[in-house]
Length: 427
Image (cartoon, rainbow, N blue to C red; front, top):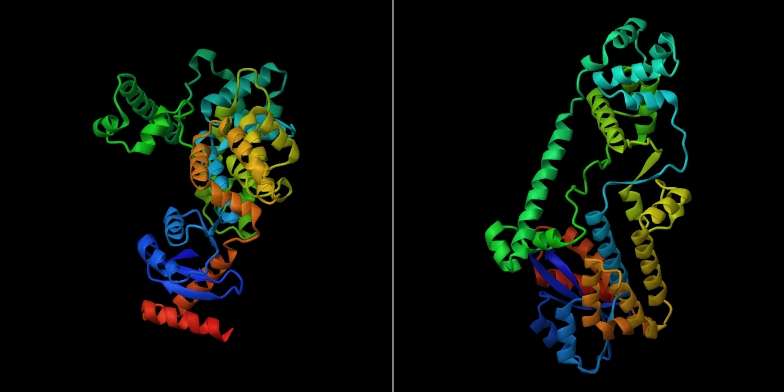
């Protein structure tokens, strides 16, 4: 059995599928306990029922057929655990994970491009290169500037060099961090004073999940989406833009080149991209100027669901560097692989030891998943022992959706049920 939506997030029904013949045998216009229980009682011969993790369906089956074997769907078990790990990664880790550079291949021109974000930095960069022995002509070539401009930069005294300016985006980010620090401090202070979560909700107006997150020891004051590259028209051309810009090519000329390759965005989008990349490089700088590189969090998230060979944004070397710096990620991936192997191994005796070991990781999202797993432990064990699953019901729901869409705007439940069951009888 499985539920399906009449109107998503508002009203649902239940679909019943014969686990042996694979045919839809009935539809209910509700997924509440009472109608499901009454329907199940009308079939006294039921011995095995496959379902998802719904507590409503579990209660209905237990009441109608206490001795029936309940089987929790393996797909949902794996999916829910994967989503719990994904939520943990999105909550704790920044949009780009910093690791030591696995390959140092940045050209001097590219480094110069990222080291000269505003006038003050261009002046300092010019003086630094001049002290290193570069001639005025060589510096002008690196910076794509005229010789007279380099001469003016060198003539400026150190005390007259203007101060670095922050972009509006950077100022907004710093203000957001300060506000978040104040919110976290307020909630933690109230908690230290002995206030319960309900009292903190009344005082601050924050929801329970927010307060729980602020009280967590690994709560971050930086928005997890900050510095994240969103998919867009420029994404396929980012590397090429950096290379062309490092050669001194204007944004207009770069846009003309990209348009021949299919880009239909604006010139301003290139400027915004370069500004963000320069700001990112500025944050990445360290006092000892160690070479760093950054791995997008989205590639690490994809590793939850795919093998590394199928994730295009990360190499094996980079993966190993990430795991070395963030060992909790390696533990999370290992835990996922162990559960996947356990579910299909038929070794049901190993389930409880896996749960105990996983609890020691102390990941809030995973602990919440394990709590639900313990409440439905018998059905979970049955999913490992027996070959049945809920794939039949999931496929039947997809079939039902097609029928619904064909009849969109003019179908009642009785008509939908009659048409679906008639189609099943024809097959």
